[in-house]
Image 1 (cartoon, rainbow, N blue to C red):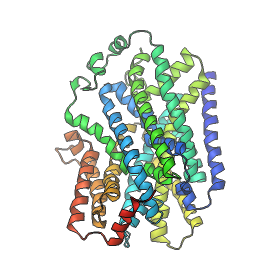
Image 2 (image 1 turned 90 degrees about the horizontal axis):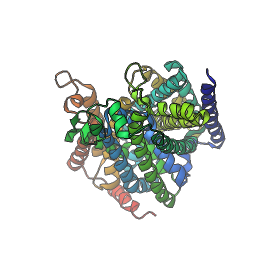
Image 3 (image 1 turned 180 degrees about the horizontal axis):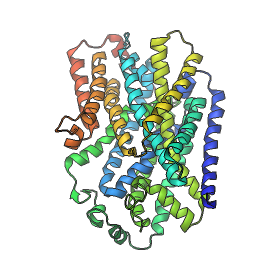
Image 4 (image 1 turned 180 degrees about the vertical axis):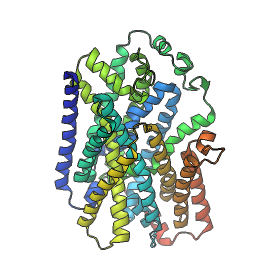
Length: 512
């Protein structure tokens, strides 16, 4: 390896060791399953906000989104707009009521447990179905994060993709296994801060170092449809966007209210006062980071010339941020250690999502399945051991799913986000805000939402094509609508909830 590469490697090693140390510190503080899965509801405003957003955005923010804009132009920003709107609505309307309701509903530690307690589901149908849905879609989601990590190490150090995949998975597994929820949240806070700094600094410095006018440089890079179309958010390459395409991208925002790894942050904040501060911090973070990620795709197209990613053997377009950092800090500015720290920002985005997904899947397996269905008399320490064992198993399965180096980060995230958003989003919203929702409606909502996404994305029902490919409509939009409709229909067609349930629903509004 060259001296520059060794310096960058040193930055990575320092960063990764720091994450493991955090895991070791919180391992000593983790005494029971509530500590491991929800941190004893002790998060402060800053940690809650940045860990929620860092766990949300993943490698998609620093690789998938900039790569899509680099390849096709600013028309790809509609996903970012949808996610920004979804984040704001989630923090403003969902967070406060969810935290209060999960406490009122027998101090629920997980989303499946909350739904079971909310509807007094003595047969535990909701718990079983919810846990299975979480495990299926989070496996895919975790695999997307591991794949992003493999591509990062492969691009930066030239390490074989599969070896790189193993290194990233091992580090994430290490601190998640040891420290649980608090370790994940504290590391996510560090990682969220690092991500934001990298996202803001790199495009600004690169723009200042452009060798000419941005519009002219974009024209030289042979963008599809020309520079004007590239900079027009209503153009998709060489043609205008259709309503369906814009609507599908905006529909990504619907997924927020159904993401267990984000919702658990709301549940874990120590007070309503801290939650209010968290919402402001999180909203500012997401606006800045999404805007900066979009600028990276645009500026990177001009800054990296004469190289055009994705052509003539060049790296994938999803590596645009990596390539910009390497060029800026190892050649133009000759600051390889600083470049290494910013590259760690990409690793931070990847790790902050994978660790949260591992933890939510582990909680579903140990707390919701093992404790409730296999061994009901298991004590907290035994559940903790099962949770840690589950983290290992899930990591291995996700590793296998991510084995293909040609897998698309954007594609994997899209499928998992749609499945979780459609299955849980309408159910969570209606559980919090519609008094008449009952057990039958909740079950129908989760099942219909998850199945709709699977059918829409995977079954070739339209002349050999999936319905998603044939219509161009994102499965989350369809699944969300179907789930919402099924909740209303089944709730109204079956027996109204008991007085005990409606009284608890009414009491939540009076909790401060």
